Image (tube, rainbow, N blue to C red; front, side, top):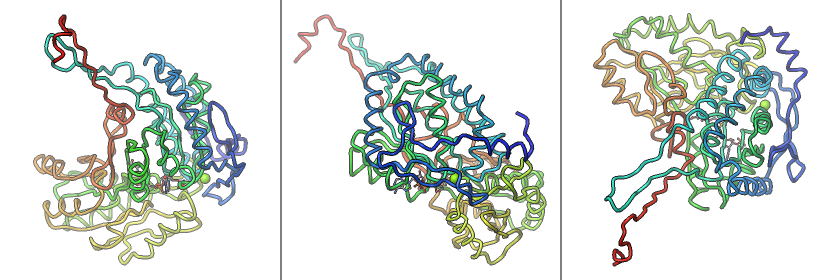
Length: 497
Ligand code: NAP
Ligand code: MG
């Protein structure tokens, strides 16, 4: 899709019809309490609209509707190819409304329209179609057994699931979860992040238009404590799939343990290393990858390469090239298609990122922060500093230097996180040894990336728990295995001993 001009995007923004009510049982409705909260545009500080503040009573109501839908089979027992058709229609409807959704996403989150149009929307559409296309091609299994028996291992949808989302990729994280959850036949309750509820609400409406039966996809805006926690503790929710910070993710394990032992899958934070060895080919290309990995989406990316580990002999040259490429990452109005760095998602998050900038002792370049916007920043730091160890979630790259390959790997692994890692080297043996030694869910060699929809994505250590998003592996989250034995012997009566 061709990009429009800043003026054209502003005109679309002016005319948008923003959703505000919760979406439960096939339609918009206010919170039972009648309460609302303001959702704002972080780029202007202005209120965009009021959104329903759901609470535990809305969670109960929505879980009841989702359970009814699940049990009567209106979605869960459809032929997989029928679910496929509906989800493909949803993907097409999102495509038809892509421009409106891209502008809504940018306004609500501060993300650039450039990213929303070129990454978030196309990937959301692709993700939903991919999971739709997969669902009627997954086979169950027959286990080895004697002639007198048959043992089947089948997958069944897990039931009513709670999907708790972060604010950094509101639409895309929604798609990563509802794609496989709905394809598998589950009924879902989505809890978007408070900062960014709008696009999830609009997608729920489109899903009904696509033919999804009512009660199957519900969206409940509200706070973590008033919606997220009641979902996590609900006795009739079978599974929670969460993406967000490590601290909040771990709470869901307690909620589960203290309620009904529901399944929990967590995608959490990262402080992802990018190792550059002095034998890396084409340092200029390496610099481009590092810049993209560190600053894309304002660094509000769990798999951002936020920790550069570079062999000391090439450090100066690499930093010069990084500084050169970072110049292209201009800060500006998110609705200007030329802008690469928009606003951070909220004043609170902006203050958090600024507090890290204040700790910088050796600023290589950048560091300017103003009214919710932060420029691309590179800081040299000690390996044990907070800058080097904590997830900043802003456009801030921390540089550490090492002397050897072994030192680089040890430093890369010296973290509580294990989401993603990258390694730049022209030495094939080192590339493989490094890929095996790095303790992370995704390792990229001579590039930065998080894979694509076909490969599982998730974290080791305190970056993840219980399962994976993306790939066919994502369907494991939303299905349960059932073993079915059938006795086929003629003299079954005699066999009972
Ligand atoms: P967050 O604060 O952990 O929030 C995530 C979600 O949990 C939000 O919907 C939030 O609701 C809810 N929540 C907050 N407190 C809760 C509680 N006590 N009980 C139940 N739910 C609660 O994370 P975030 O700040 O939105 O997102 C940034 C984090 O997400 C980063 O750490 C990043 O690394 C991580 N992330 C990970 C991945 C991945 O795949 N591994 C992908 C993207 C982002 P509110 O709206 O009220 O806050
Ligand atoms: Mg907002």
